[in-house]
Image 1 (cartoon, one colour):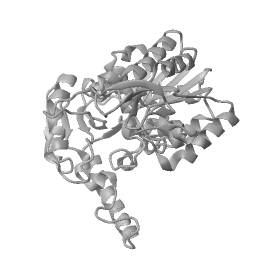
Image 2: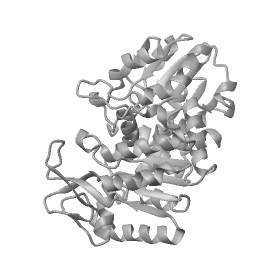
Image 3: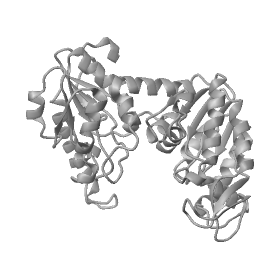
Length: 415
């Protein structure tokens, strides 16, 4: 059953969205990509004459109420985006009265799901090596089911439209689906698009296939890197990872970020790439700073010969050319993670070079998928979102899908 096949008239519909949007000090949204992504599904429910219940998490409140992560802060913005007043339920597990009052065409936003530890289903205040952990976990699993059952009781239909959390088996992303039959649980438009985009990259690869993996740590990306080595023609590794590879190959990286305990992992990636015939592209030069700040002194130096007291903060001019040549001729492109500290305006050149090369390749017919918060923030910062094929709302979920893992949020609907 797809969302297009359902008419929600007269029904109450609970939709799991990902409204974990970045806020500034004043509690204002600095990037509303995730809200805009959910609008087609939410508007479909309202246009059909359904009553809409929206649920999401925000941040990591660790099972405790924390005003800093209250979704009440974004109710006005959601109202403006939807074009209807959105009521707010200040307790997601005690929203029965607010739900009962909800009329067709009206919308209600529930408070942050993660104010309850039952949402994530992790035992609180007990470590995994504690002999009582197993019992605590079993007890929490029962509590999670009850919490999911409460959320399910609000509605006739459950719609999963939060790709960013689809890799988590949480109460609202997977467990809740157990309380709806196959006709009354479905994926939203955003989820359908995400699943199609991942399929395009993995099942419908047009070659050459270039993947760009950025970010600071090899350790967080090693699974995806190893998986991609079996699929891509070119693999660009950039960002902070550059310096772990440079050090592994005997270079000096000064004060640059470097995972000393992952040097053997880096060498193994290089070996695997050779064995599989993958063109592994690593930075040859960098823009180094004498301080981690936007207005520090800078110099361009080899990525494997950075002076003491200096740290690599962006890809250098030669590296940018290398990256561009591996991207511009590609027919399938995946980008996850920036090439430098793009939050600082003086260190955006590497990431911008990647974005421009992707835009050029896309204009020439390539399919380009941008995923992961930082890459999305990059492409938005450069005003180039309309020059790529697809921007994914998922970071971890996208990477796990590309690794070939089954996502609980999708399995709960599709079986």
